[in-house]
Length: 304
Image 1 (cartoon, rainbow, N blue to C red):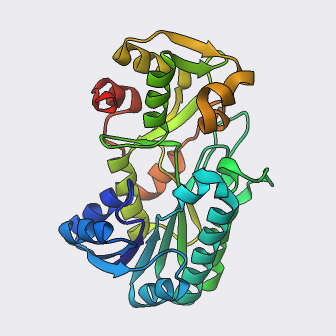
Image 2: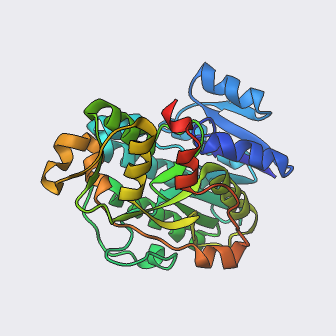
């Protein structure tokens, strides 16, 4: 299968590309820079130069492909105050892919998030189909784009959504966990909010990449999938490993001081968002094999 991948040189994409090539697929990745193009070429993938905002370019690449995996998101825009703009760019890209793939039966897989999907209980894949209206901004804002993708099944597209946990961990991760480590170093303490009992689901990036592979090949149209290896890791347990690795005290931070202590991360850190992947495992035979988050933290690569 010829597969067009956006975000192909990113944290998840750079694991998805070799996963697909190893399974015998031909991969063409979207590259917005010479550096990204070089990384894709070195991985054995073809290169399609362009950006998420270049809709004609996206349309032509999707038309030529047997399937599309959409991983790109304008994180730089989102985390510099432009979250609505990043969401809108993502929506336009999804609509463009939908137009290019309509009526073809070809697979279209996107990445979305699991955090904030359900309140006060363990989220399941069924919540992706019937999520209630949620506040704008933060982890909730991308859910509308995920529902748009699922709706494309009615247009003859084998669409599916892979919901990722807030931490897709591994050596080289520069996401939320790396940010927590940096904040601990800066503040001189490893902090958690409240009593630290709130939980984040987690998965290793290689396990997540394998699920994108399975979704491309097997997911039925309109499938919501959960790339969740661990249902919920207590934030306090994460803080304790960080404190031990950095030889820093581990302290509780009042929720009222979340923004002051954790900055932009404070809005995410207090969410209790456990999630299950039972239905995904049963549907696709996905079985995570990589280390869990705490074991991965104990390896020390987050602290180099």
